[in-house]
Image 1 (cartoon, one colour):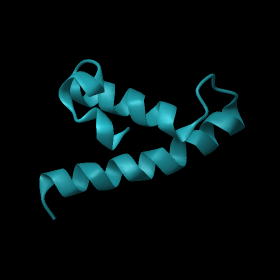
Image 2 (cartoon, rainbow, N blue to C red; image 1 turned 90 degrees about the vertical axis):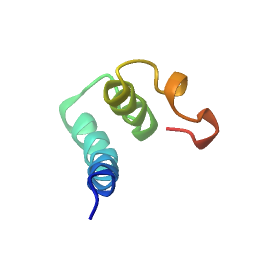
Image 3 (cartoon, rainbow, N blue to C red; image 1 turned 90 degrees about the horizontal axis):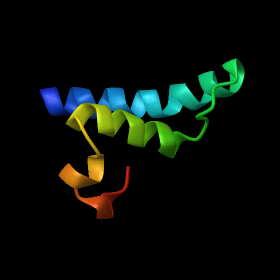
Length: 58
């Protein structure tokens, strides 16, 4: 498995785990796509769609 494959796998796992945790713990963010955007923003050090293809969505 490449480093990129590992990151994609972890990203997908977090996209499933975080919304459930958010609902359980009463977080403000609750939707998977919101977490996806936050994760990608952090990964690229800015707004994800300034770096990645916006057509692919978060």
